[in-house]
Length: 468
Image 1 (cartoon, rainbow, N blue to C red):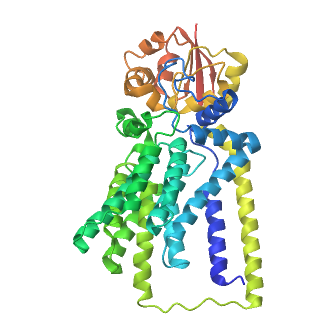
Image 2: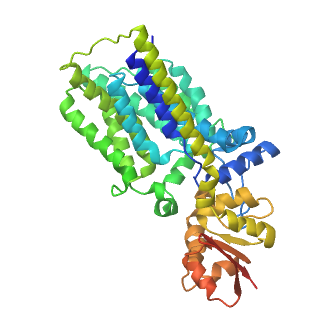
Image 3: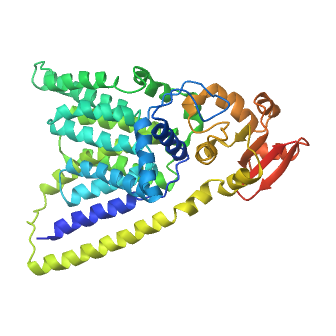
């Protein structure tokens, strides 16, 4: 029978899938797509830069190779619609697993999951990071349930080949292991190591080696975290700006969890306290870490709210007559139809989003009117240019900040882009003949006043200069 509670759950997850359905707009998506194509067609994983002419041959840790293969496979099978639908399903599945960890089903649990989803929403999209979101959710579920821990090492092998966020899985196992040890010592006055978790931890650490980059993956996540340029210039590494509406749900979740802990009266385990404090700090330091705080905080919030309600409110059992079940079925059908219409609108809007965010017309001009040799380009457009122009043309820079390094980004790319006194030096150093940048970029103003450069194309979005 389709009771009202079951109807609520069904509608909730249909709505969650619809909410997770987004047009593809991540600037890095395009070089991920091209990398996947390269791997599939050549049956080789690149270990050195193949996309730029400025850093050609420089070591490249292709840590997302499996995610990129999957992205290209989806694109080859069904184009952008397949990618949009598959990643929406992946994101929704991460929150289904989160819901499974919740007390207070369905209403309190759904409320907490919804708040977690709203908190995480700014990161949604067809991105390798979504595999980390799902696997982090699965790891937390298995560690909380204290069963099927044997699944973690094979999942770690999968994770380390999908995304460098695998390090989060190692951290989670270590926190649960340490929490168990400390609680044994403080509550039971005994020292009993959880042998299953210790063995799983060792196996997962060893499983990291099972990737095409070998032991390099042990240090790669830390190199990313300590990159000065990535911390200074990539927006998602910034601390959340609570003046922006997209970060308001994070503030609500953070404050709501603190209030619930103060009033709920339910004891929080040391493990969950460590996770809350650690990921709370990480999320305040970098917006990129907010999704992981949401995965940790939402169950704690639900548990406290449910404990408070259960002691004060009688929860009636779920009942449904045949007539009510039929009506609920009709309601669910209408919701599914509305969801399908919304998803179809998102898919149909993909070309418009591409035109709005990327210089599609300017690239069309390059392909037909200019041979874009030695091309200087805007950082955020590098991935798109790789998808549209490679292998005939290689870019000056793209979103792989780890490949280019802090010195190149700051002393070469930005020296020209900012249009300072020495703006010509990087262009001359790399014999740049064509420049494609935003119309309002400082370098565009410099080139407009330089006699040796001709403006051959301009629109509201992009401008192209060619050296005489």
